[in-house]
Image (cartoon, rainbow, N blue to C red; front, side):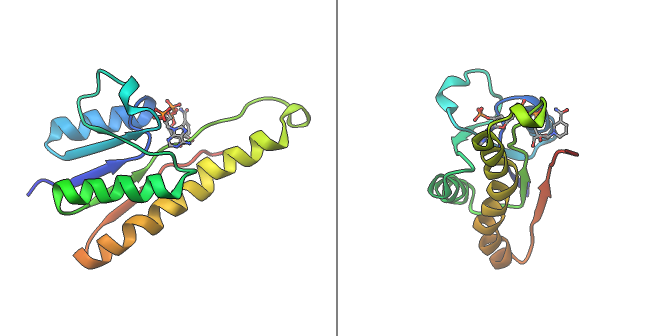
Length: 131
Ligand SMILES: NC(=O)c1ccc[n+]([C@@H]2O[C@H](COP(=O)([O-])OP(=O)(O)OC[C@H]3O[C@@H](n4cnc5c(N)ncnc54)[C@H](OP(=O)(O)O)[C@@H]3O)[C@@H](O)[C@H]2O)c1
């Protein structure tokens, strides 16, 4: 049976590359984007998800399980970066960064663990920034 993989942030960069690689290896891949309708060239389906919105996380996870019946691998990849001198970066941007890069992946893990516990199997891979 081909494993079912959910990658947050599958519309560009590392998430898109991982998704394409796994898709060509035969995995059943779902990616996410805040605006999936804008991405026209994805080789795997993209589901709407914003890691700052818990409802959208639960809705995306439920969609994958409804279609595929299971969820074997979750890759917490969605993330954003900030560069520049600290004193010039607004606190709102720093807090937003933590919402996306830190609290968001925790919400994703909380959303998928019940399914993985029910299956008695599952793998969660967290992609983070060194920063
Ligand atoms: N590139 C590097 O050198 C590097 C180095 C170390 C670690 N990383 C980590 O690797 C991961 C991917 O980086 P990347 O360079 O591939 O970035 P990227 O090309 O900018 O892609 C970021 C992905 O995250 C999604 N995303 C952004 N904000 C989101 C939100 N609020 N909710 C859900 N999805 C969101 C984007 O999707 P939409 O815009 O379509 O929603 C996009 O698919 C990040 O976690 C980053 O910290 C990257």
